[in-house]
Length: 140
Image (tube, rainbow, N blue to C red):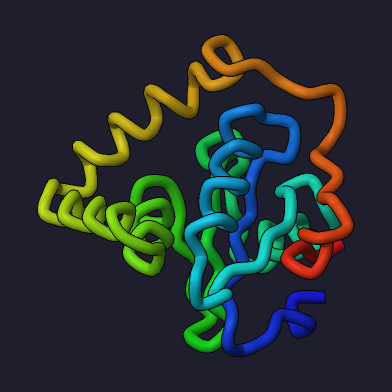
């Protein structure tokens, strides 16, 4: 399952029922000019495979993960978001300046948003179903 990820791409795992997460995925797709990212919901088979492989505690990390198959590395929370932003078009890549902020501060802010995302942005009944045009960007 994880072996199916193309080596020239990175996998973004997101909460498939979160409105903020789904909007963020569409934002990334629009600005991913180098076709660097593919996507899967955390709730999917591939999402569960990555979670199990890296022993991710989904009670602590439940909103975004970035898996790089070349380095076999998993990034999460603010580090995942900033690594994604770094590879997007202008002006989004400028957010990578926040790497200068200590990780514990970035993750504190990230956790506040993640904890309240359903209350502030809402939740879907089921995972997003990509349009036929976007299907190639999604696994599972």
